[in-house]
View (cartoon, rainbow, N blue to C red):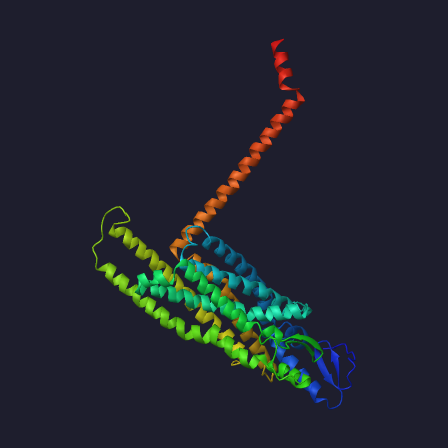
Length: 421
């Protein structure tokens, strides 16, 4: 592939598009070339600059180019719709719904933040690297928002478990006011935990490029080279990879199955207890057994919804977290085959990660009956509002037409006088 060469002023190397070409024995230039080649497995550069004829690379690239914005915009739309449903009067006074609102808002932040990564690394247009502020904000959000989602799912699971095993204590510990305090406290804690990230030296010029360093598209070796060259010993990634891995994966990975297993046992006991009771053939009233059974069925529906959300979270985020912690070393390839393979692995895991945050609407607003009913009610209210507005506009148009017709024949007293004559 022919590459335009330009001198960047350093006698050690020359830059050609995204490649580094050493002059003589420039070990630094060789290292940069190798790092940039390996980093390209997560971006469109692997197909454009390095392996344009590799079918697997092309498939992975087009999956990201098309799949990422599709997931972002669909996920953003349905997460906003979910917030609208959960803010309705019938649901916003429920502890579970308050937690789910916070979860949906965090997922919206993840979707919006993903758009910057898509523009920067798939369209190859400066977005994150446009300024230090945007770099810090996007890298901060890619840690904060997913961690907030994980904490909300853990809190929601604990809330449903306490409701099943001890309803009186649930009413005490998960009142609306206390639930909102929990959500606020968790958000403040995560902000304080992650706010140092933009303060680290993650926005720098290295290997002929402006870098906004993040583990999802940049190699730890590149950060090490920069720290060695600048004399900076503050390597935030060494600490934060374990912080993020613990909050976003290790704690949910072990905590959610334990809580959900306990929930499944509670639901099973409720089913067994209900099956041993004789059904009451009566109209459901607040004091009747049929009405109580209906309430139990509603609670079970919500619990099944929560289990589906947590299982999906558990499955969809595992691969992404393996990359985040550098357990799966996608930047350590030595052959073109390995680079193509890791490009596809990265593509699958990153799309699953964003699908997890985009699909919660389908998992909890469509799988549980109370939320389906509220969604239907909101849709009917919207249709009625649109119908009323259209009807009012039609009436106003009709009245204005009558006025114009009347004015063309003169005033009403004049018409009356003509009729008397």
